[in-house]
Image (tube, rainbow, N blue to C red; front, top):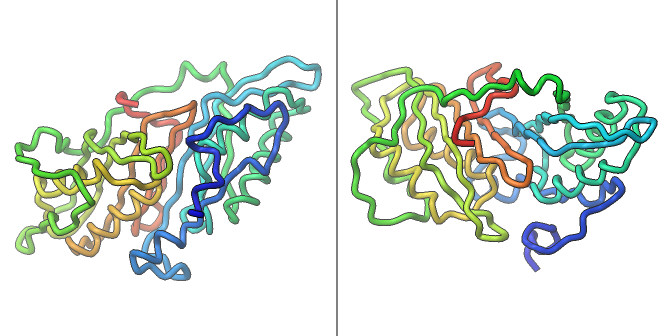
Length: 277
């Protein structure tokens, strides 16, 4: 039996009418990190997984339906990540639960998630009256999508494609909207805009795009893909400073943006979404 066989992703599951923390499925981060030679006690990066939850609804004390967009921040240092469909099922259980206040709602969600991932989880709500203030923002930096190239294969991820010029040092931000990986359980595609912000030897742009394209047939959770990209760039290109984040397209009312960095204090801003999402 594999570690993924007991999670709800890829199976027909009845939607709950009551909150059930037992629906949340943790995925141990150490399993993938050990294969990349990362010591769980000394991570080479810090970061977070920023979740946007767009289908959260509950009842007020008098039974009136309420709705908000929730933002959750799971630290990269947590022992586990949470699988996305299990999170969707869990959050749908709130549709018939009554709460005296949004504070009580947020406290319960945070407490349940912290129990599953093993670390403090940030939680905020954006009420529907504020949704008009949400804006789309294009990804930062130079877009790599127009780089000419011939592609002969689409996986597995090929860090040997990466090249950096030791004679030229730069500080730049680049991105691509062409990134695709696949769910390791269902095989369904996951799309993302990947942003690389670094300082150090100049990374060859066509080589970087070719490397990111090589994930097209790769099966990996979003968080794992971003960590592997960060590690490959750090090890192959010798970046002095490096931040990688990927804004994955929303599925099932949820989107996730993992960020990994070795730059102190770097974190994701709230409520920023790319037009392609």
